[in-house]
Image (cartoon, rainbow, N blue to C red):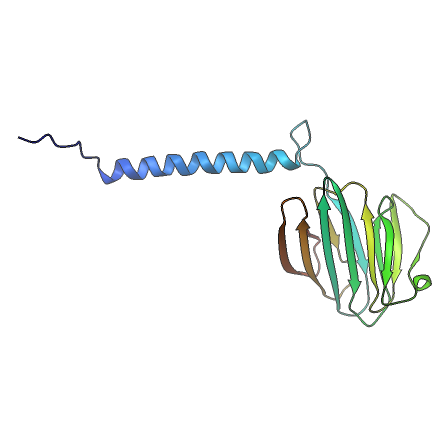
Length: 173
């Protein structure tokens, strides 16, 4: 008489599958959290960026990072001059589609520089330290649409999204 292999019930297979899924999820979540947490385990504060405008606005944002250093490209696709407040450590690199003198900066205060971007201006900023998280604030009473592109030049991974910012701030990344 042939020997039969033991049969496991469907319940045993489901429990085993759930255990494997939980282990994979815990490992993945732990590794993602470790990438952005500080030595004490808490998440670092988000870097604040503030956009001031009076008309509905589309502000294209593209950020790229390599070895902890980044470049941020911002394009004012609106019909009015806007104000963009960013950390003082972010340095203006390049201005496109308008004269260099048309993009001006107010005196720095509280760790931020307030840049004036005329319509259709595209400005590139160097980020000496790429922030783990950026929070975009829209204190204006009108909508702000942000086509966002994030590129990791080391891994070659890029991500695109379109965000609508109204009353509450939004995490860009």
